[in-house]
Length: 351
Ligand SMILES: [Mn+2]
Image 1 (tube, rainbow, N blue to C red):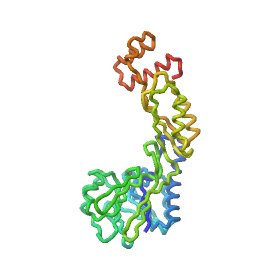
Image 2: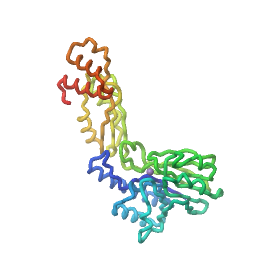
Image 3: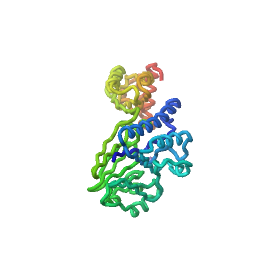
């Protein structure tokens, strides 16, 4: 049996935290396209079932168009079972009220339900805030089967308590909730995997995104992460310590980004303590990055390197200004900003 394990598609996500409204709309569509592409991949690669381990949708209230898109896609591939539990973001109850619920779309409730596929059992339950109170005492699996269990939540005592799942005859725990691929062991018998989200939505979802492909033959499991996202989100850290040359910094940035696809999203994160003489041109750099990539951003976490001793006897206006700021009650971050803008102003640079 061949299974795709996915989760956290967050269809209908607003995506406006990072993107402008045009791109947010585009990305919203791309999340759906990636779902469709994954289903086509399943069809082309003899996948029998797709496990969606929660948060298929970003919120309980889903646009009618999105519902229709998902239901029609599922109907188009009747030979693939869609095994869908709800997560903390979505509710799958709307499916039960459909006039024509696709037979190959299987939903769950707040008590365990098991599906049988020859020597493989898939047992699942919806996400529930109070689930830790009862899910462990009510889970009974046939030890002679290959047991897949599907749950949504983080690996904590309050949500998915891995210690209480030990010795339950689980072979594969199909999890959802964490947006980054993660794999670990439950006990001598079983493993767990979070597939991560199939598409990154913002700069907190960087790196390779995709799904997990499972091949189970004679109760032997092979699992593979399949990179599948249309766009990868990158965060590139550039240390700008010890230079007063913006050209040198630009060269360093270019070296680090030249192998990144123009379809991707890139954030440059500046760190380090930079020379007081350095004149940054973040805005100009950002414009050129936005020409180069689908979307770009700059996160400037760098600080001016200032040694107060250098200004102790500096009688210039700059010296007096810096001494004044350093003596003030401002926080270090605020001092840094004030000095940066002040020095720029004194150098007659644009702020
Ligand atoms: Mn979640």
